[in-house]
Length: 414
Image 1 (spheres, helix red, strand yellow):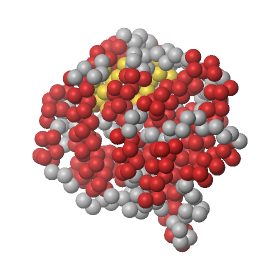
Image 2 (image 1 turned 90 degrees about the horizontal axis):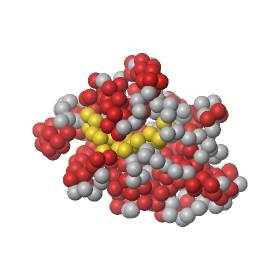
Image 3 (image 1 turned 120 degrees about the horizontal axis):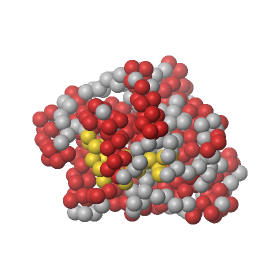
């Protein structure tokens, strides 16, 4: 199916032409080999202990996939280098902090509230609302990427790392000006757990950003327990000087790791969002193609559609089986329909709190109303996409998800 990529900023194309003129695609300018990255991270931080070596295997697989599969242009190489080295530098600082502050290991992570669901099913919207609760802690992009020293209440909203992180993450909007209509990013915004899991180099962050099928296969066929263990330790560090009554977390990738999520956080309270998979497929395929387009001049849109379509079917069937077999504590899971969430978000959040017995305070309600009033989508433009863009047969795809839609009462949007 032909896919029309959005416009990139003119400077991006000029930069990529420069990369082509270098003859090596920019490899000398932005090397992506393991030893160069590790050495650069050590030199930038003055530290040398990365902690356990588990991350080295996914790092090697990811870097090889970047060279052999991702078909990077110059800005793609520069972004890959920036994103990977930043994680490695942060990991060095984290490990150093843990050694100097062993008391962090005694921090207790109790009953986190975790949002998950297929991508583009309202998980970000819901997480954004839950982050308004002044008694909760929702991890923000800046603290997950620049974790040391741990954040403190007095400077949490003014820390200079917020601006540094915002400049970095908003670079994507500079590359593709229409991207803000598809997703909202910001250094101080609540963000998803892929950035925590990235510190073991095992994350859907890379799968979304780059065409790296061998790395994706590794992530779904390898036990991710070490990544979730690191996830927990990072939350301990982040709350060591700035606590809340609970963590409000979010990641679609938790959906296919529910047993591992509950093994890591046995008292977790999980909210799963549900939306018409066909509507989601059109949205996420366009978003992923756009994000990869900023890093490569050759985007396999049809491959994205096929991969996501099969992935959706597998994840939904896997989730249902886990719950039917008792492999996860169903009493700790609440299902929320996207249609209900967007129709009445305040009542949806109130219902979540009521279901899990969490006090719904007046100041939380006031913040929710303020947030809902301040986020009209028209300010960011409209994400234009449709199921028809995928080139798939509507009747065939609808038949794949009949049982799912019936089970959770999910209305069709296509």
